[in-house]
Every structure is written in C-alpha cells, then in structure tokens.
Amino acid sequence: MQTKRVFVCGIVQESNSFNPAYATLDDFIQYGIFEGDEILTSGKKCGMTVNGMLKILSDEQITPVPGVSTRAGSGGPLADSVVEWFLDKNINAIKQAGKLDGVLVSLHGATMSESSGDVCGDILEKIRQTVGEKVVISAAFDLHANITEKIIKNTDYISGYQMYPHLDLYETGIRAAQRVVEHLKGIKSKVARVEIPMIAPAHGYTTEKGSLFDLMSYAKDLKAQNKIVDYNIFQVQPWLDTEKMSSTTIITAKSEETAKTVAAELAKKEFAIRHELLGTPLFDIADVIQKALDNKSSKPIVLVDSADSPNAGACGDSAAVLKALLPYRDKLSCAVAVTDIAAVDKAFELGVGATADFTLGGSIAPKLTSPVVVKNAVVKGLHDGTFYMHGPQERGQERNIGKTAVLKAGKILINVSYYGKCEGDKNFYSNFGIEPEFCDLVSVKACTSFRAGYEPISAEICNTNTPGAAGPVLTDMPYENRPVPMFPFEEITEEHISEAKCYR
Ligand SMILES: [Zn+2]
Image 1: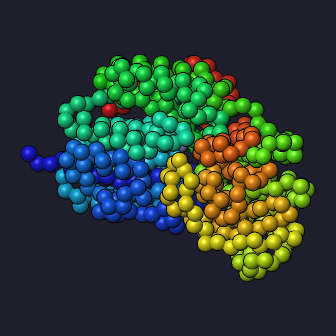
Image 2 (image 1 turned 135 degrees about the vertical axis):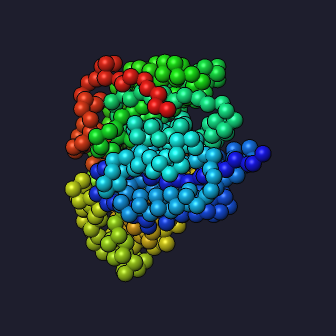
Image 3 (image 1 turned 30 degrees about the vertical axis):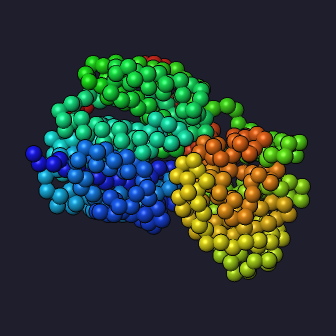
C-alpha cells in the first residue's frame, strides 16, 4: 500500500485593527520562515503546533510534504504583500507536490490584512480550490480565533487551543493531525458551528479558573465520556474591527445531530457567562501608584498595562504609565517599557553614562497616546535586544526586541526598545539588568501571559485602565465595522445566538 502524503504549512499572526502599523515580512523573518525540509528539521523553532502535527504524522508513518510555515508576534493587520507571498509559496508547493491525501494548516484565526478582514478564510479557500473537495483539510487555531463561515466551509476539521494562557500549542497540533489520521482511516466526523455575537477583553478571563474554566471542563468531560470527538470554545480576539466577527463554539462529533446539539448547548453556556468574561473592574493608574506608595511588603505592585500589550497586537509605544510615574521619580523604584526607535538611536549616539532629556512614546500610534518628555535621564545600558524567555510558554527560546537602551530617571528604570515583544515575560526586564523583584512598581504590557512569571514575586496585580490599541474597556474603543448587536456594546439575548450548522 502506498504511504499517505499530507501537506503541512502555516502562518500565525494575531491582528489588532487599532494598531496602524501594517505587519510586513520583516515581522515574520524575526521569528523565522521555514520552507520545505526546514520545517521537518527545525524542531520547536518552527512552532509547537506544527511540531505536534509532525509527531502524529511520524507516528502513523504518513509522509509530511512541507510547504512554508512562519509566524510573527501580534501586531497591526498584515500588509497585502505578506498574504500574497504566503499563498504564492504554498499554492505552488501544493501544485508541485503530486498526489496529496490531506492538508494540515497552522493558523491564528484572527488575522486581518490591508484589504481583508478574514485572511485565514482566504487562505483556506485558496487551498481548498487547489486540492479539491476530496482532500481532507484540518486546521489549527488560537483560542482567540474568529472562525468565520468561510473558514469552516473550506475546512474539514478545526482544532483550537483549549487553554488560556496558551500552554497547549503542541497538543492542538496533535489534535488537528489526529482528525486527518482518523479521516484517512475512514472514521469521518461532523463539525458544527454556532456563533455568539459577543466579545470580551483578553485580560478578563483565563481557562485556569472562573467561568471559562468551568465551561471548558464541562466540554472536556463530554469528550472524556466519548459523547463528542473534540470541542472548541473560541473567545474571539476582540480588537478586530471587522464585519464578520463573533465568538463561536465548534464541536466535532460522530453524528451531525450530536455535533449540532452540543455546539448549541455550549454556546448557550458561553452566552450565560458573558458578563463574567469582561473581568473585574479596572484600577486607574493613580490608584495603582497609591498602592505602591502604601505597600509595606517587600514585593512590587504590578500595574497591568494590557491596553498597550504587544501580545494583543498593540504598539508598545504608550508612555501613559511613565508620564503618571514621573512625579514620583525620586520616591518609587519602577520598571516601565516603551517602544521608541528614535529614542533608542539617541541613547546609542550618546553612549552609556550620558545624561539627556528624552522624548518617549506615541511614536507608532500617535492617535492613541502622546509622547512624554523625561528630563535628565541617564543612559544606563545599551543592548542588542536579545533575551531568553523565562516561560513557562516557550521557555528558553530566544527573542529579539531590536536595539534596546535602559534609561534611568531618578528611581525609574525604562526599557526603551526598537520593537515591543513578549513584554509579559519576566526576562523582558531581567535580561536587560532591570530586576522586577527589586521594584516598588512594575508596569507590564501584557494581558494574561505574564501571570505565571509575576504572581510568585508580586504583592498585588492590578488590571489598569490605560490607553492603547488593546484597550480593556471595549465600549471606549473606536469600532467602525463590528456587527450590531454585539455584547458588550448592546445587550443580547439567547435569540441572537445563531443556529447550529454543519457545513460539510
Ligand atoms: Zn490567543
């Protein structure tokens, strides 16, 4: 018998509509572009999801046919040229691959471009048109995916992360590949989708506790009891300003009837927890500074500046927290971060030890935040921007935030970098000589990923209402294209939940 052959490719990027800087190929080059056999030999670097897929193909003695796989940090929508490049590479590779039995694609699911609100749907449609209706297509997604009708119509199976923070990338790749293996053995399942017109800010929930944990656990039990084959509860990335946006439940089951029934049941449960997913009330920056002033413990107060979280696609260029801290520069030892290329260049020109006035912030998205002048800041350190992830996600992996300067204004230490990336990782500060543990206040530009590193070392973690492209108060953000009605902008009822539907 001839061995089965499955094409493998991927492009992972989470887009934020409110970040005005389009993501270019350079953003992907930073994380690596893997083509052909490089996908098979690059190990973890190529992405844990693709690794999980390859593991199953190898176990099942299925031949992987590698295309192009890449990923980038979250950011603005993709430049059209990136999508064209990716499709060109992979569609040509598929055409030259000879007979294929299946396709595995690693995607984010909340990816936009200059001209499209649904890049993942566009990619899957092109792949489907190229391989035809009979070749099984299974795609892996982030938990924050926007699973549109176009995505599901062009895909046989959908597998999304079930954990937030995302600790199951590898396992999601495994699940996506398992569906292909089963399908090729003649065990075919049905996939049902239900849309819920609701969004929630990413800092508001996790799958480790609370109502989303309960909902995930309920679905997990159904899977453990073999009532369903697999489950996905997609809580869509909310800073996507596009007409076709919704949270979804996607259930894989042996029968269409079961898939539909369970998807509808879970959607009702997700609808019921919509208020809880918005999170607890936010602090103002001034409240958090007061907490740091009053704090008697030896541990720092963490000010969560999730609005400017590069992991949520924001720009990392907000100096709003720094501005509020400046009056306390001789009182509070603080760690803050700002992305600002011009300021880094200035620091490099001046050299270590120099003192100067620096204008910081508002350099990428001046409509969202404004710059602040920091007088008499000392250039304390200059770096090439390389650091190693503390983890737990991607522990030990190398990241580079471009040329980086550490400035010192009184007791405030400022990480000023070319690019904001992985700012929730503790080593984002530590590796540049800023020790969060020794601060009174640490500002962290992240939504949830930072907790594993910071919870053990901090006195209190404060979600804070700050300005930025990932603003946590969604009703304050300038959406222009979102569907109406949509929670939390409008109250919705169960009637607004869509019918459960199978598309293939
Ligand atoms: Zn996510």
